[in-house]
Amino acid sequence: MANNKIFTKLCSDIEQFGWHVLYVCPEQDEEGACFAYTVGLTATFSHPEIMIFGLSQQTAHSLLQVCVDKIKAGQHFQAHQGYDDIIANNYQVMFKPVNPAYVADYMGLALRYYQQTSFNALILCWPDKHHAFPWQAAHAGGQTEVLMLMQPTT
Figure 1 (cartoon, rainbow, N blue to C red):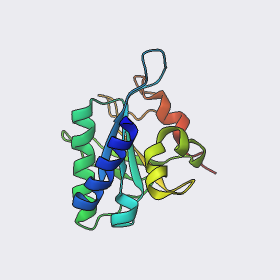
Figure 2: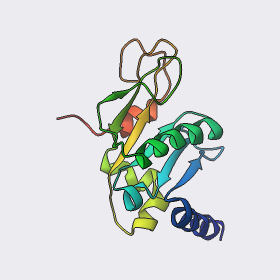
Figure 3: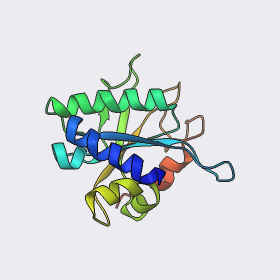
């Protein structure tokens, strides 16, 4: 029942604003980090959906809002490219493609909305306080799900 209310709100937001953000946290007995993801960017702006891990709901939503504002202005974020205009203090973020094998496990309501088994999505990767990304040896740790979800490079 709750899923139907959430899905109705999702559809309403996409119709009104062009996108919706979902914030997901594991149940108490489950492992994993909280994450947020967009729904509607593909339909409205022909842009991959965006996921972000390990941040509070407010911070995740704020960063996604910055991204959506840039997408609305015509920017198209590219995988494996750094961007220094998303977060403050000269920190760079990078987008990585989501491995399609994990889309159903993490983005279920987006699959329901698009009525497809797969679609393009990017992970918004943010650095630690030393500007290192999760896949770099100098990274302070955390964001382990990001590493699992990233599409393997060929």
